[in-house]
Length: 485
Image (cartoon, rainbow, N blue to C red):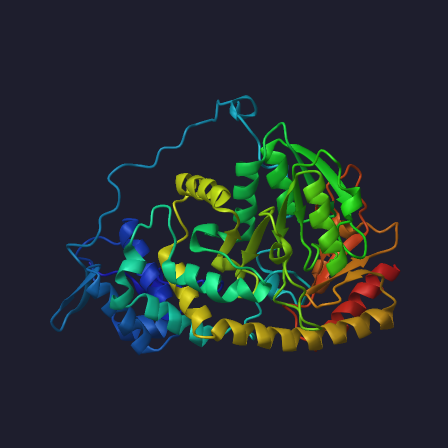
């Protein structure tokens, strides 16, 4: 029996190469039971004509499926579903007629009421994406990342790829962080004082879980990173929100009974304020006075293209009071999910044990690939290139904001990748966001960054990390026109 060529079609929104799409389409047909063993597939010529692709693309897909035993080749006859192909499940999927479980009663805890916003996955399809934290494909170093990934897959690195580190990390990545990344921030640390995490957010979660309880208090910036707000609420600790000013977190406003102080001194999230050196010293003094620890999220320190970044708080710490959080996810690409914690051995030991009980360690292949990307100098080149481009985009954006009289609430004097904006008091930026989307403009409403009751609704963030300089003026013109209404 032959499988009709009409059975096959390529989805317009599918990801991956044409060859991989064809492989996946056939493999799924076999695994689902749609194609039976011994059935003949269309010839490579017919399938290529039907799909509108080259014949070699289909031939390569067939060859790969042949190698994986999904297909078999018969002399002068073509390709057939292999008799050794994986078989679909023998049971029928069962679905209960109705859900009789009272989930409102059964759920022990709820995590869906947090501040974290829902962002559009198709952000790149918008013409004017002033969206924060995504990768600009025109800037990313695809070729060298691919080279490092292939090197990490090689026989020489087989152990790094396949080993279960249990609670440890890739020694090459740890060595680079200790010898190159941290010294640039003025920090000296031993390998036993460093823990690789699944991004900065995971580092913050580990820290909160280890150091906070229902009897302890955390001081947090207002406004602040919305995911941190969720993490702290889930820890059930007491929370004290401290309003930031043009220089970031004011030490004198931190309550006396605070046990843990969370701060983003390099670029305050989301206002972009940079904490001056004198205030950094005062913050350390204040923490010492009340016997509190400081969690320093060194947010966007790499994106300091206007002037060199100030030394990290951790580098000024003389009594082990600062826990440092860093990340490669923002500067390389967000999907990488690699960050790190730096702190005293006693703290890192507990954080390591907690991480091991949840996920053991971040994937070895990603750690080794990142280690090569960093050590071969590609990371520094990428950050330098981003800084040059961001500087140009920021200049264009500031000029356009001035031309249209749009209200700026905060801009990083050292750089960063976004500008914190304030609309007129009567404007709800979540409603503004919905009105702008049909016009191809994406902004980030500011309400999720506020943890207080009845937060202001007229703030929003404009990022220039994922939009070209040429598109910025037109996008802001549409924004200004909508605001004028």
